Length: 326
Image 1: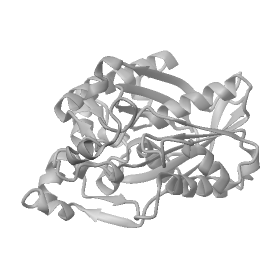
Image 2 (image 1 turned 90 degrees about the vertical axis):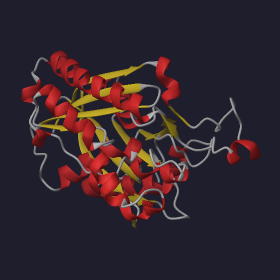
Image 3 (image 1 turned 60 degrees about the vertical axis):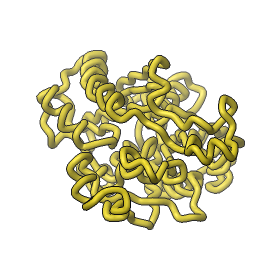
């Protein structure tokens, strides 16, 4: 049986740090207001001339360099994003050109903040089917480009970044052990950019009404997240024949520390098992779990043999979990 081993990871992080005080124009003492509600202290915003493909390219190069891989070895390149450089072509093709992945085929995948988890599942399927030997998946987003900076309920939450993961087929039982991918279109309206495509094209009127910016029904999304995460943990571990207590680490989508606190109380899992970076990066959408995975592989927290559950949830509504043996 083939498994999809994680052979390398990499990050693309903008230089510009945006502290909570940046949002003092919205609320008094923005630092305390944001920190107490979300656990976020700062985030990164892309430079004016920096697009999603640029961050994705940086993450890809860092991943390739970390394992000494020639980009020509890649059979497939997937960019998981809901903020592509443009409607067409696929952002993945731009990254393909930038890194010289001449033998790969490249495409984008969009499941909003679940995109990287969906991309990992796709990579696993390609490898297990025998179609590909080596696949790179990059979660990359620049939400600073689509935020409504008048909406205090959403704009302080997000940051920009990219996280890359390279998978390669192996007969050893390591890498991706179990996956779970689901969606429920009945909740698609909860997270959206209303004027951004064929349903409601961008016009002067929609721009004036801020309909070309990010919209989220925060309370309903919080309820969804706190309900679905325990189910992901239970279903993925049950299908893998283990218990949640067997997990060494959990990498949840980095949305809000209050969600994580709620989950630890609901599941009884040790808070130290949850690996986080949202205090420094905020919600980086599709990039979030990739950035955490890369950081903790590089700093030695995640060690060979560790069982790590990577989870995403977001617009669509969409959610999923990837169980990885490091």
